Image (cartoon, rainbow, N blue to C red):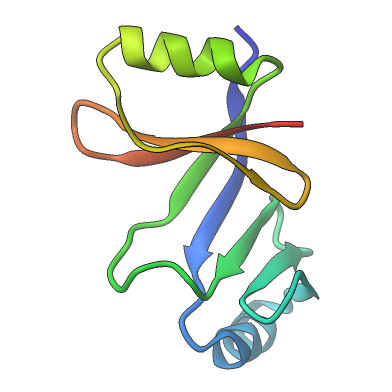
Length: 110
């Protein structure tokens, strides 16, 4: 299996204010991917701020897979609940699922 933790998304809220906070508090930089998403720079891991994330959503841990369809099949066979079927985004495709404890994760592939 190839899946490893690869990316973390935080709720972005008011994106400009969130970027200002993380820049001032921790010195992070950002790369904007449209008006509602900014990727981290200098944060120690790949990730981003998502202004579209629902209020109260926990950070989204994203795994990377070499074969997205195979990973989806294994998640379902193991009892995971798919919350968002495979969809395209700039940079690849991904799906979201909940584990038995209710944690939501994503899996992406190129």
